[in-house]
Image (cartoon, rainbow, N blue to C red; front, side, top):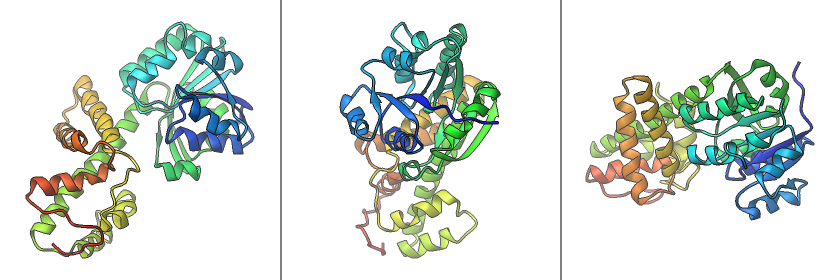
Amino acid sequence: MSTQTKAVGWVGVGKMGEPICRNLLKAGLELHVFDIDPERVRSLQGEGAKPAATLAELAHGVTTVFSMVPDDRALEGIALGPAGLLANLPAGGVYVDLSTVSPEVSLKVAAQAAERNVAYLCAPVSGSTVLAQSAHLTVFASGPAQVYSQLETTFATFAATRHYVGDGQQARYLKLAINHLVGSTAALMAEALALGRKGGLDWSMMLDVMGSSVIASPLIKYKLDLLKQREFAPAFSASQMLKDMTLVADAGKSTGTVMPIADRVAEYFADYAAHKPHADFFGLVEEVEARSGLQPLGRDQDKL
C-alpha cells in the first residue's frame, strides 16, 4: 500500500517546479526547498515552505528529495560531488528526479546513488504549466518498485496520471519517445498548414477540419484555438523543445536506433530557436511559412 511521506525536499523552483511545490504544500507536506535563485524560494516561503541555503542543508533535513532541473549539466551539478544531494542524503534515503535528461547522465546518478545506498527514481513528467497548476500532470516512473509504491500518494498530489514503467532507466526513454512525438507533431503541423495556405485555404476553416479529422490528437485539439489566434506565447518554448529533440536524436545515436525524422525535427527547432528561443514550440509554424515564402498572418487573420 502506498503511503505519503510527510517531509520532503525539493530542488528547482522553475515554471513547473513552482506549481508542483504549491500542490505539495496544499497537500499538507512539510516542504524544504532549494533553488540557485533565492527569490524563487522566497515566493514559496510565505506559503509554508522551509528554505534551504545549500543542497547539503536540504539533504540533511529530509530523507526524500525531489528535483526538477533544466538539463544534464544541472542534474549532475545538484546530484553529484561532495556538495551534492547524494553525498549528503542519509543512507536509506530516496532521491527522485523529475527532469527531462539523457539516460546516460541519469545512469551516472543511479551509480552514485547505489554507492551511497540511496534509492533513485527516474520520474519525468509530461504536461503544461497549466496542468501543473491543476495537479493534472502525468508521471512516468522507473526504479525500485517498492519505493515507487511508497511515494505514489505523494506523486498523486501533482500528477493525476501515473505510470510505473520499469526498474531501471525506462522512464527516461519513454519521456524522450513521447517528446519525439510531440516535437514531430509540431513540425508536421507546420508543414501541413503551410501547404494549405499555399493552396488558398482559409486559415480557421483548415484548422477546424483538422481538429475534427483522424489526425486530431489531444495535443492538436489543445493547440487549435491558439493556432487560430496566431498566439505563440510560450507554454513550452522553442529552446526547451530544441533541448528535448537533441536528447531524442542523441539517444537514437547512442542506442543504434535509426531516427532521421528526429534529426530533421531537431534541425527545425535549432533554426527557429536561433531567433525566437522564447516563443512557443508550435511557433515553428512561422518558421516553415517563412521558408515557404508565405507572408505572416496577423492575429485573427483568416485569409491567405
